[in-house]
Image 1 (cartoon, rainbow, N blue to C red):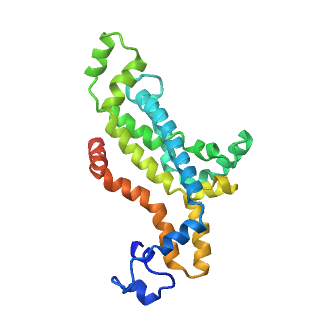
Image 2 (tube, rainbow, N blue to C red; image 1 turned 120 degrees about the vertical axis):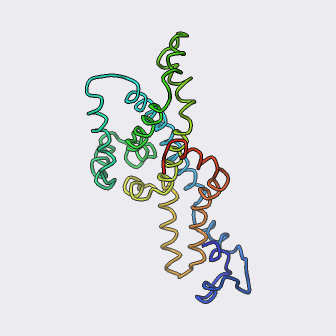
Image 3 (cartoon, one colour; image 1 turned 120 degrees about the horizontal axis):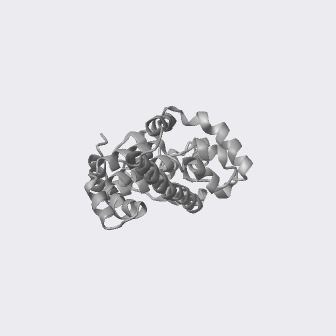
Length: 248
């Protein structure tokens, strides 16, 4: 994809197959891609979508994980397994009821409406429950002896110790929602609220009609590059966070 995006305009199939063409690199494809697509707006929208979803998720999965790991209440185990049933549902199954709910709440075709169904995460709750359960209770008991409330124990003791689990979940959440296509396609009709994946498809369809594969590669690279750069920059931290939480 990188090599194709650096080919000069109107290169042929043989040039695509050649790893070392006579004329490269050329940045014309990126110039045309930036002119043809509203990448700035799409990037802002997807950042709002990804980060707005993640911030709320970190709060909900931390509280739910703490409740299932530390609190005692009737039916806790049964409720937890019922909660995990969400993991067995294919996301497309929930599109119709979610759309109906958003229309009733007046949130259809809004960025908040696009985020709302993801604010609760069964995977995140399970991950944080396991992370909290792996932390010795001695830390909590010491804080409780010092007069800390449950909220202070959670925010000042448990969450800092559970940072690897939160980082691991954040990575999964950001990657998943950055690449999300079907749900934004269904819930957004206003071009001003489109995200990168939706914009890329429209951009690629236009370029594909002209068989401009270098332009398609350049546009795709624009979407892929932020996550790739983030992974390269923080690769060691990514791996350590997953190893610390036992995710293989």
